[in-house]
Length: 214
Image 1 (cartoon, rainbow, N blue to C red):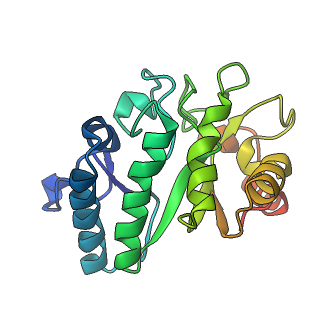
Image 2: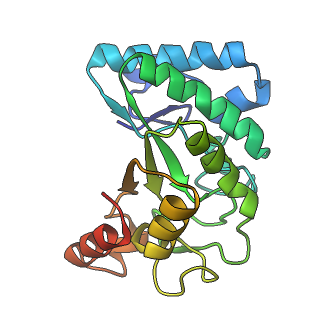
């Protein structure tokens, strides 16, 4: 399930589910006790409903606050990558206590983009910051990364031909080899326009698997 809290939560309060605060609200408080309360509530609800995987937490760094799909929706904990890692770790810990698998997203960082990958391919070549990798490096190094979701963004400095989700340079080279991640790698929705407008479904699936997605 996609249950981040805030504006991205399939289990909405209007349907009778808990009103879980979004990442930005939690990150702005930057109070671990508050974070743990929100994370525990979310994990308990998901467990009670029978879910065993949550496509969260978002560990994008809020580089571009007006980003239409991350900062603009309040989905990022902070502009500070260390705060992002600290806050996300609490959500991972709460989920694990309820036997729920967390998925860190959107690798290697969607927070500096200025466009929405649901609507088309997003090029972050001129905006991506190396600090966006810090939450992944920290959480992977601390053993707090169950799964990682690869984003449909392009950085031509690393791969001129493929978005991250279809790129062995990113998945195998950076995530696996450089950061040492050994868990499951999931592609973002393969039918989003960023992919669907450039590849057929069979082509996209084959490229994702060959790039290192599981």
